[in-house]
Every structure is written in C-alpha cells, then in structure tokens.
Length: 470
Ligand SMILES: [Zn+2]
Image (spheres, rainbow, N blue to C red):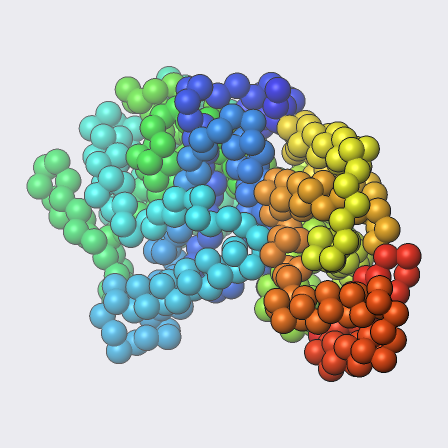
C-alpha cells in the first residue's frame, strides 16, 4: 500500500492507480536556457524517487517530462547569442545545447532518464494549436491584439478555478496588473498563444475564421498538452515544486478541464518544497545561487548532492550548506567503503546476516511507500551497511543490499565501487597462498608489487585489500 500527500484535497491519501496495468505520471521539466539550479535538480530527484517507488509497488510506470524550449528567456538569450542565425535556428541552437547539459546533469545526480519520456514544446506545436482552437470554439478563450488568452471568468462559471491553492483571484489582481504587459480582458487571464514580435521565432497558426496568427505557445498550455497527449486524461500523478502550484498548475487544470473536456486532469498532485541555501531562499542577487558545476568545482560528486536531497523529506525544505554537503559525502563514502568488501577474496556465508538484510531492505522499501520517507529509508540503509565488516560479510547479502539500495534510491554505490582488474586479483590470491605456505619472502615481494599498483593489504583476522587512488 502506498501513501502520498495529495495537494488536491491537501491530505495524505492511499494511492491507487487509475488503471491497474500502468501508472502514468507527469513532471514539469526545465526551461533550457541555462544550467538548472540545484533547487530544480532537487525537484527532479524527488520525482525520480517517486517513479522508482511506483515501479517497485505497481510495475509499469510511464513518466513524461516536458522540455520548455520556447519562452521569453530562451528567445531573449538565443537572439543575443546567435544574432546572425534565423530566429528559429538560433532558438534551436541555444536550447539544444542546454538540453544536452540538462540530460548530463540529470544522469550525474543519479536520475534515470532512460525511464522518462522527454517531450519538447516545439515538437508539440500542432497539438497545442488543436487545444487552443477547441478552447476558442468553446468560448473559454478569446483573441486579443497580441495573442490568444484564456478567460478565467468564463471557466469559473462552470468549474472551480484554484482547485489546488484555493486562491482568491481578486487578491492577486494588483500584483499581476503591475507585471502586465499584455492586452487582455481580465488581469487573471493568461496567454495561450503569443503573437510574434519583430525578430522573434514563430510558428504559423491559422484560426477557424482563416486569420493567420504567427507566434508561439504560452508556457501553461505546453504542459496541458504534453501531459494529456502522451498519457491520456485523467492520468495518475502530476509532480512539480510548490512554486508551480499557482498559477502554473491551476492554469494547466483550467485549460485541460474547460468546455467539454474531462472534469479530472490529474488524480494526484505531488509537490516538493523549496531548497534553501543556509536557511534562505536561493536567488542570484543574494549570491547563494548554485548549479551542479559549482558543486563539482569544489570537489563534490553530484551523488553527494543526491544524498543531501534524500536526507530531507520532499515536503520539508531541504537546507543546503557546504557543511551538510560534506556530511552527505561522508555518509556516501561509508557505504562505498563497505561495498568494497564484495570484491574481497573471502566470503562468510551467514543465514542470519541474509535474514537481517532482507528485513532492513523491506523496511527501506516500506519507508518510501509511506509518502516517500527518504530520510527513514536512508536510516535503514545505514543500519544495513553497518552489519558488514571484513570478518563478517555474507557476499550474497551484501550484493542484495547494494542492488536494492541502488535500485530504489539511485545512489549508485555498486557502480561507484568498481572491481579491481583480474591481474590484481591474481596477485592477491598468490600472496594469500604464499602466506598460507609461510613463504614470507614471496609474500612480501607480492605485497610490494601490489603497493606499486595502489593496493594495500591489511592482515587482520581476515586479510583485506584496499585501493588508494592518489
Ligand atoms: Zn508544467
């Protein structure tokens, strides 16, 4: 049984798939005009854990994520960077570059992108236009001089706007009017389609009356279309950071449930809290804004960051500090030190150890099924790794722990503690034989040869080798 906190209804609910044969989930993805900041990455790490847990509980899970490759920022930066290219080509050049970086960084922090269907906004223009035409036909949208807008008031006559945030639209008017540069009837209305401004990239759009309105989609409509088009509607779970609840997710819901469309968009909305830096909100002006390369340049592994994120529950703010990142690194290194034991020459089969590991691994999985309790899961993982020592290691139990922990948490302990080459193994085995035969001269000679190859042997009760990579 799996429990999740559903923002729709604001409570912990038992999660039951809409269709028993496949779970369908959607995550709001990146706008590819720069590196993702570590707060964005933390959101994708939680989504990755959610998908892993769903897969473990229910089997097949289809996970779709959008790539926003056309919006104000991508257009601004692409025109500045490639002024000599045609606008759409410039846009493609810039976003293609940052999309590749995004994929690399997702992989680096342990997110399994092979399990995600990534969809670009610019590959979905035809579907986006189809939905806009339908909204226009049903009079929930209207054409203004600079684009096409969604009419929140018309929508609200039939359905509730603000299902997640219970927002009072009128209290937000002031702020939104100040930021308003568009020609719309009502301040809370939002753009579905933005008419091309001179020099901007654009796609042709022919309206029902034959009018041509070249331009590009608004941000909210992208997600409505890419989710429903790839997953069907309603689908099971929609994820994102809490900052996306209003207006982004409210607008997605409105667009997808307007007119004669289904009343339900996504069954569960799962939102993660912000990442704070030293207790404060991350912002460029406060100089506490970090990307993955900032962490790597200070000598940390992207997986250290993953562990730091998992140490917090997704519904509490993760606090990032260099000190907490160091602590996460130490924790991960400890697991690696234990994991190295699986390559030792000795094995101590132990029924008891196998049983203990099985139990802890089950507790770890249950913690995740309980509203993704990652801090709890890591505590069980610690307990399990602590059961092994050079003198007491059942190799099968250790393999099971490494495999399950890596599969459910994506921490790559197995992958990051590789075996030594066969020739080193051979030397270790020869030396062990020499010692057993009390041939100390040969034993010492082999020890020196291993030392040259950065392998140290500690002759305890059970001789154990370790590798130093300096
Ligand atoms: Zn979205």
